[in-house]
Amino acid sequence: MKGLNISYRSRGLGFLFLLCFMFILIGSQKAQGHSSFDLIESPTKYDGKRVVYSGEVIGEVMIRGDYAWVNLYDGKAAIGVWLDKNLTRDIVYTGSYKAIGDWLEVEGIFNRACLEHGGDLDIHAYALRKIKGGRAVFHRLNPQKLKVALILFVGLCLSLILKRLPKG
Image 1 (cartoon, rainbow, N blue to C red):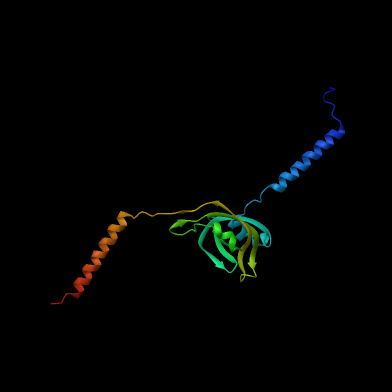
Image 2: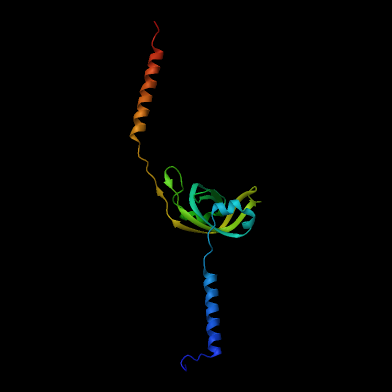
C-alpha cells in the first residue's frame, strides 16, 4: 500500500482545487429562462429581479426616442420588453399573418408594475440574443373558399340586377 499513501496536504490541495473548479462552473452557468406563466402568475417573486425570457417577436418594433418596445410571445402569453433601440437592429421578422417572428432571448429587470410605463408589467432589457431567425409565411388559396366566394359574388350580382329591373 506504499503507492496509495497520499498525504493530507495533497488531499487538501486536491479538495481546494475541486472546490474552486465547482465555483467557476456555477458562476459561468447561464441564468435559467423564465416562462410568461412564471412571471405573470408570481409577479411579486420576480419584481425588480434579473430575469431571462425568450419568445417570438410579435407585432411591430415600436421605436420611442432612444428606446423601443418589443413584444415577445413564448407560446402562452406576450410580455412587453423595453430596450435600447440599438439592440433591435438584428430583428428582421416580426410575427404576423405574413411572417413567423425572430425568436429572441432577453435579459433584464422584471417589473410587475413599472412606474415609468404607467404601471404595466414589463421587462427592461439590457441584453438581447437572437436564438432563431424568423421567416415569411405564404398561405395557399383554398380552392373551396374560392368557389364559395365566386358563388356568393354571382348571387349578389344577380340580386342587384333583379332589384333594378322594372317591375311589371
